[in-house]
Image 1: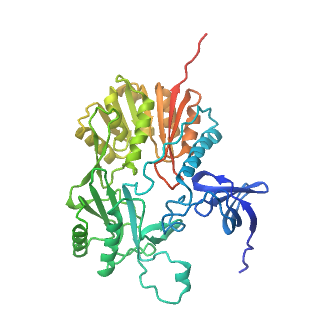
Image 2 (image 1 turned 180 degrees about the vertical axis):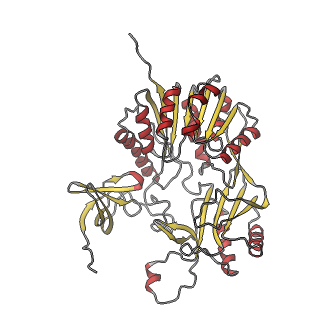
Image 3 (image 1 turned 30 degrees about the horizontal axis):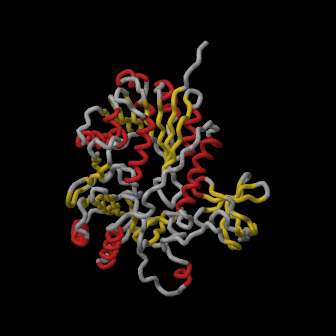
Length: 481
């Protein structure tokens, strides 16, 4: 079979950062995209073309002529192979600048929106060990280095407990030390792997869909609570009980130890029952109130509950949303995509009534519990597909919203939801987004009736390209003659 000729483009300077963490340069009339973990702005490189399209090229570096003065030494030994923390080789202040620019580029170029001055991005106080949730995968096919593959010696340990290699569902990078979650996260992972190897437990085979150990989810809370959820392919109590007893003995800090049996051909477990082995079925996160004089809020987090994974920065994010809403106490507020009611309960004491809508029924039940444990009695929560749930009949039944806060998933809001926001015509819309591209699209659909009066980026995920953004929209004042 005839090999495709390699195309090398020499001596290109990486110009900057684009969407999704990619870096860009240009050659002739085309933009070239390069994975941001492989290069840095101001690197001078030779690039090998991996994909060529009409308007752009994708490439990888094959030789560096000059390294960027922006570069710093990555702190993690897994950098470059692991799919997380791709910007470790850039100073954090530089990362924040790129994220700020990403917000502006999306709102101005995609949305064609008129913006006020965008406020400086709020950086995270912690840039390591900031996550409160990680999921690791067991695999009998660990990712191997080129040196390991080249050797003829038999690999002593083919098993891995770690993260998926980007774009490889069947290959797992065995993690030695992860800088994302505080102790004892690393101890838990290493304890599990050692026990499994010592006791010859089978690690999952993603290709053949067989093996005993599938995944482990570790969740910690700022209250000191610690949850571990083991996920097994099949139910064998003779294997499950000794493993969980050993883990609990080695890591007595665990306050909630649970497990799930997942016999499916995918890793999704939201539809599967959770079995409690030891401790409580939940952990508790705490968050300061929007007003300093009010009691600290508590949020109960179960095995399947959503909670922002950077808890301290979540407070900063919600505080921005609350300040933009600027509630006086007599408003009806709709909180769309409320999840477990975190924002709804956070702002409830400042409003007359808060109504939360969410498509996951279990999340709504958690939201109700969170109101109850915080003695909040002016919230109501409803489950259903928001594009169908939020209609004129719903508004008539529950009251016209003075303010709508919306925090949709990465895909943004359905066009029907945007149209219903316009029909509901609140005085203010506070739009919290984890994807500035879909946020820009939605804002453009609202631009004929709302002005953007404030934009505040917030960094929740240091060393990644991900960024949150909060936008305040205020209803246009119609001038009549």
